[in-house]
Length: 271
Image (tube, rainbow, N blue to C red; front, side, top):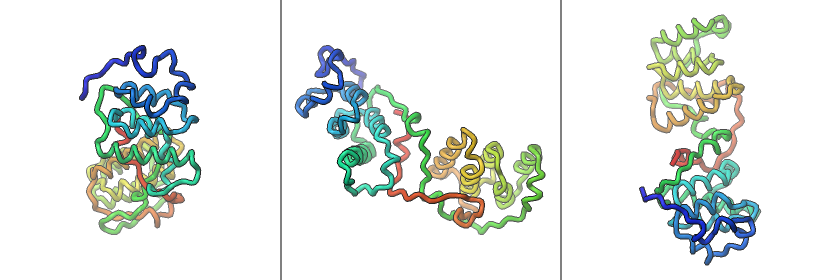
């Protein structure tokens, strides 16, 4: 990690007393090239008014002086969720929107390739993306494994109290039994217990995902649990034992949104 440099605003190309919106509007490429430290670029990126366009931000994204933290902040401030419907090779008709999209594509390429500097500048993207939850296309697909079936009756499950739920989850002796229990969950705490069970597999985990999504959306921590499941699947935490198809599950109420590209997980990690 590079040594953290103190940004002396009085000697910089952007004195702190003059860092007004007017200053940023008048910045040209030659003035930008006078900035030599990651701290200077970070300050510029943080104080830029997006209504003034993305030219300056694009210069920052293309600069080898730019830090990982600055690039990460720019990426999430550009609201990538609003552009996932467009293919990465596409040019948007709206000039302003296309400028932001071009910025995102530059950041996607450079950040993934390790282009940006590792510095002492820190950035946590959680606050910028936690309110926006995107369902990846692959979690709506059928999982691999043995065919599943439901043998529990809904009327019987409706009579279960908390202790019975907990007892039945703990006492499940096969993956298909745990699957049958998971099929009827309507509470996040039961979902959490199933995900921790030794017999939980990818098919059950995907089933739990859709039960949380459709039956538990009113709970404030549901999105956090959903994101956790996505992370677990990406990291291959569970084996593939049972087959589950969300598309044929009558309890899944989901209108698939078309997503042309997904946000890489590295963009969700703090630097």
